[in-house]
Image 1 (cartoon, rainbow, N blue to C red):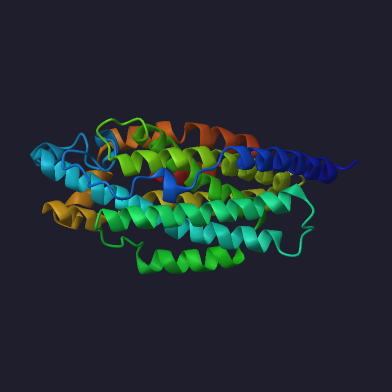
Image 2: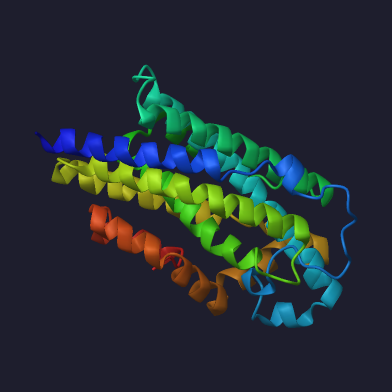
Length: 299
């Protein structure tokens, strides 16, 4: 039996287990989240320590109500970015599974993941609507980069790229779902996302491992750079500088403070530790890629 055959069997077995898990532990956001309750004025949009300005002089200048307002806009920006990337992810998975055997568990779980991502995007969209937030979208050049990426990326680049976004958000949301001072709609949506995305991350890891088996040195280095570029784009655009306008801070000033924020850099490095370990194991943590990850403080 070849290494490719073994890899295929591994993906199929894992997909079967993930399908069984999705049948027993999945959520419907339309009923799980209390959409009708009013939003308490004293609850944050996300744990304050995950705010881009937490630990900076700018944060100290804000009133408590301004801090609450800022975190609500920040979580809205993160959710808008999540919707944007989930749309990219769905297209990449569809292309990867195009005309594959529908009897395979891998194919069926891939479609299950797409269905999950659709529900998650609607859930995030409804939260932004409930919080009465504007649509925080990435800059035009990033949108065009992503348009090309989702049309061309495949194999280990598609799945490892998806894993980057999922892993970073997962660590954040594990904190948010436990935050007693965080809005209930955010806490509940975080719980739903963490539980269901854990299956997606396992699937992405196994697909990445399978695609990396037998890959040559040139392709491995090229893939590593592409994945690091995706990571750079995602992390750099999680929170739009426009959120600072909500509390009277000029966007450039807020962005400068966020970029210099040592607390945030430390939080990101800790959040990405498991991801970097996996990328290293998969052969996707080359020296040039490490340099890119360091620029966005993922290492």
